[in-house]
Image (tube, rainbow, N blue to C red; front, side, top):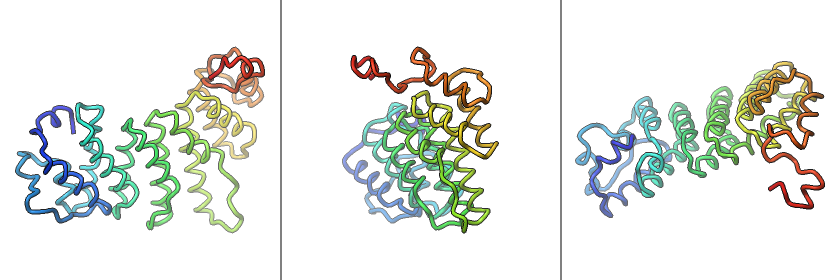
Length: 267
């Protein structure tokens, strides 16, 4: 919801707060839920509200649209109670919803949140194996990686680093499995282009140095240029030399040298 929509709400009573938390805790499957008769959200809204849709609707497309409409209260004039409710709804949908589209919309919405819990949820999604088909599971993980990038939170790079480095697929894995792993690595490598921290840049240089797949090397090169603002050629030696330069401002939080370790210049 927009700030304007939030501001139009009447003052909340204890009943409103209790009702909203019931809504959040009951959305594990993003399905319609039963609420106490005394909790009648509809009487407070002239037009349909995303929370009402999520409470009442069994239409997956409408619920997905409602999840996409849950603008972060903390960034739009809302209060801590609303923030708590929205985070509970979105994290539950992102991790447990039985509708793939609802999961994808919740994951996308969390990428626009500045709440640290959004990053934590997206990291967990990346490690899940939902009970969908392999292609959909990979799509969900790729969206979670893209949303981690969108948060802009430095902590979001942790999962991107792990996935970007990857590992060789087992010999018995299918061609489809290997392609999905490759797609997820592409998503993670693109995401690292948004981070200037030393570990992100070093990982991209490492991929440029060691990766056999030309597409991944090209993706790492593009991310290096985006992250550093430099236009060096796709030569790992040149990028490694840039990374070693203690006076280069292109890398934030670079690895400290021996003098800096002693003096504590680099934090």
